[in-house]
Image (cartoon, rainbow, N blue to C red; front, side):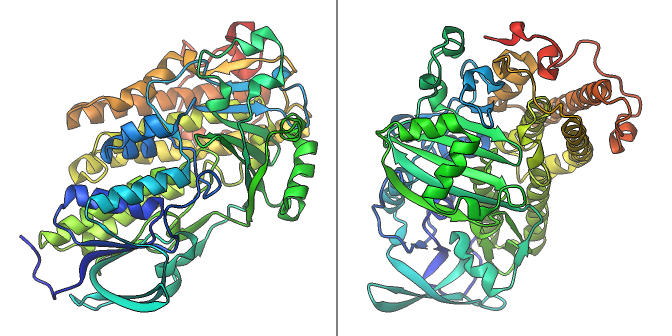
Length: 554
């Protein structure tokens, strides 16, 4: 049944033909083949490869969305780089990276993700959309937007090739990135308190960490693919530096920092950024200056993290991607939130097409989406001072992964993201996990501050590898994302995973008190209510930097 409505030029007008807009168009076409969709994009295609946009690293939700929901696995395998997970080096000021604590996997985990060349990917998505009968108007600038009231159509005015155009649409979706057309028009801008800045650039050629050492043990820790395929994080107090390889034989590089600890004006030109890098990550700077890495571009952005007061409306408009909310690139959640918001938008448009009321649905999906955003923001906000602590930060990373793979990731993979019966059943469980996470983030912050005050925030230079691949339950959390379960079995599995989170929280609290007996557990003490640390530890002693960790070195 199609909802009776005034005749329009298109069913859906998408303002912005970048990653969010193009994937939404393809998902809509897949779900509703008869939809008339027009995408209005300011760039002309094809765009350049390599130095086009940042946001190249994917993680499990976004990767699953591209590969399996949209069916693009073959393109990702053939035209982009299979990612070797995240990798972290606590190497501030050090040339001898092989002597620093390293955190990562020695082998590929089961669930795939990719390093994406955004120019190459968006060119492919554009051609794929056109082949699917989606109208792409590129080289166009939106000049005005008038919302229809009640059942009236929305009007979009744009300019292309020097000529003015207009179209009417039942739905308008803003995927315009930081231009944030709807958010600015309706005064929906909502800043957050995460004070982080970034400067980034691309260079020709790849940066290979194998060149950083000749030590045979260090070189032999990883089975192919080697470290260069990872999203490598070089960490220090108040910042991290990324290295992401691109299939166009370029490397993406970027500094992300707490604005109070590392002011943006110390890195807002390439020359300044390289001077900053020589001080904080001299081994990387030396690799870049050894030759063969021509500068491709340079950009910077102040206070990049932001929220929104509204993203979905029963009046048939929506916002997706960076036009709505943006968190922090540390765990590469950008494509995850595109996948989630696009899926909710498809649900809303599909329900509207079927003649169903959507106001309550839009409010519910928005509440869920904002809760995912707010809970994920806690992983970053006020935590950057920890980033150089090679004792506490590895524990935080394990916790943060566990939180993601136990809750949001399986909810998306399972297809239950919009299933009201399943969501209703899981609501108390998500509430428990949220409170646990808040307690753990506060504990980690306090733990790190105490280490810093005592000068105990760095581990000995023992060259240890904390190998996530060898943690059996952690490996299984990643593997089971791909399982297909009936709703009851899925809910039961999530209960088990959240129970493990309680065990891990109790273990972390116990070890924090071994380090600092007077540390305040805050809400954790009440939440755990005497819950003991597991008799069989979830993490061995090497993760707590308690012993010479020879058994942790692959």
